[in-house]
Image: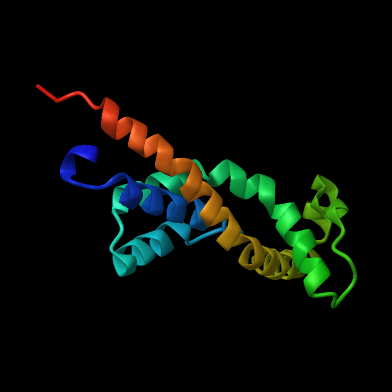
Length: 142
């Protein structure tokens, strides 16, 4: 990708965009969303998707913190109880669990919306020197 005329700042922006969208607390649809955003913003699809796919462990790790931020900002309903995620509850309370998942995801989306801009700026700031170093160390392909 560095040989195709992409500047390190373009690569860093695309990678940061993919990482930021990759931590979006949705259980589906992030890859098509990354395709759409990359196309709309004129970013490199491969770089955005690389960031997206590398971010999936962070998506899992950050779901509960995003949900707690959303709970603070949207205080409706009782606090979300993580004990509903036990195997016993999954088997016995599927209707209640579906409602819990929808409310938890809504609150997590609010938390992500609050934090995502800072995550984007931080990941772009970290990625830029890495892509600059790769650009200066590249070896011509033979």
